[in-house]
Length: 396
Image (cartoon, rainbow, N blue to C red):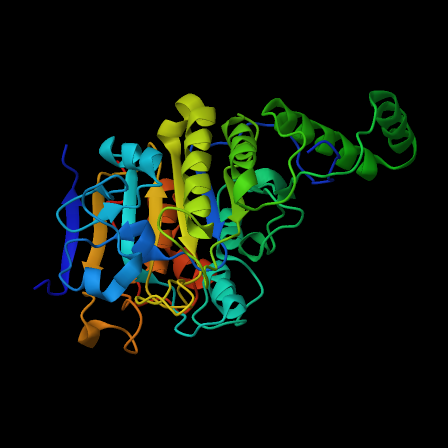
């Protein structure tokens, strides 16, 4: 029987302009880059990273259990865990030592509301709506020479994780008609003569939009699973620019799989495929800058262990997350695995969380961006003194 133990195992073998205050001016002092991908809706971590070696897994998952062999076999990570077969590119990253799957993790939240859980995930607080600022904003604001362009949201407005005293930029696709160059030139001339602040905003928006368009972002609509690849390419364009932001945030919907979740087809399959392709597109677009990049992929909570009557899963607790990038010490699974036997489940239905995600966030922020520990303890993640940053997530 699998007892609760620490597993750290190696592998075998948009054309309309938005108006961000984003000044492409002096280059940043660091070459480190960070991308946060928030999976909204609650990803089924047991489907993304299947604990095939847990003797209770097959019975607990029932018709949603993945298989070790066959046409749609899971992709082995170690003797216990395997990736969903719809994540082949992420599996390749794992084998290259650039993907660190994390299992049986959670925020401080233990209920089942999307809104409350996402609030805790993004604020870093120990309870919903305990604060109005995001942990990434607070972390970026503490870095030396912090400027408005330190953070970028790939969305129409900054998500909560980026809100706070440190100014950030936004960019998002639009379905509005193109504005021709002559009209833009006339507007810029008018603003320069009458309102320098508007002129600066328009100039920076034009510059940001130019970066996005270079990645082939024209024609994107929305932030669902089908659009993640071009948005991921836009994120890479911003992050690898010598004068661009240090951190960016993307959001991806489509993870609330209450019905017809499926194994070979269905909403979860589409979402996992899109995530796999999007992360690979981001890595490719980053080029040499990938070696100094960390990507954190997280969701607000996991899902129930057993499927429901609609062949889906309901809101749960323990979840899975990923840390990826050229700067990551991957090729292993980070999990203090509690087991899936009924007595081991949280409230008799969920994967029991054993790793606090705030420890992952702290480990990345301290080790990668060099955010001071005092800032992490008091500003980014208040009331988290008992949660230590996880060490050895990154290459020295």
